[in-house]
Amino acid sequence: MVLMVTHSEALMQRKQRPSGDISTVLASLRQVSRDFMSVREQRYGSFEFNGDSYDLPVFVFSGSSPRSSDSIRLGIFATIHGDEPEGAYSLASFFAELAQNPELAIGYEIRAYPLVNPTGFEDGTRHSRRGKDLNREFWLSSVEPEVISIEDELWRHHFDGLIALHSDDTSEGLYGFVQGPDLSKELLLPALAAAEQFLPRNEQRIIDGFPANRGLIQQGYKGVLAAPPQARHVPFDLVLETPQNAPVDLQVRANVAALKSILAEYRNLQSYAPNI
Image (cartoon, rainbow, N blue to C red):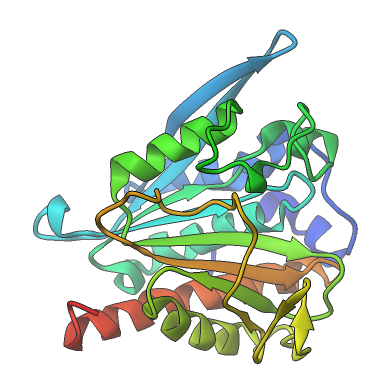
């Protein structure tokens, strides 16, 4: 890959967290959208808090497809917890690679939400500035504007797959959660294997309080970001967790490898089992 997350190269060699400057964390994604026609920036919502205004950006990658209705629609979400911005950096590197190597994502439309929790990111806190853990608010009649905006996106776009990027400062290795159809498990296991090129897997039997098998957890918390409960089409649903105390550049590389694996594996599965 030629184009990297140039604005944060020095940062990504260190274990410390980035500053909470929104323009800085979005700079590389915006550069990719300027340099490549296959990537465009949109706004999916906005809100105000104590007189400060926040736009909620989404970056859309479009792979070639005969008709847009034929596209495989993926939603990738990062920085749901404000002190976990590693996913946002991963999305910048991932989109840069897709833009330069579009054959990796032929037929996909990928919507990347790098800063679901912008006030938490600015403050360097897990919660939003209203004191809410946004990843416990979904589909529970939340009044949080960030949650309402994402829920609207989940209804509108009828995603075929959902991927959330998190980082865990209590884990020494990679792991993930699966929800939805059995397909989710079939995608997560190869994704973890691909990410192991850069970071070890968490092999503990109990992770984050849940039973785990080789880094795979099939339970979860109430209120996490997920497809609408009444959705007729149930997407695959994965959460990727990197060890936050590892160097950020390795977390980014692990996430990008996992995401590329998911694209390839999902296409392979669809090719011989379209109704899986």
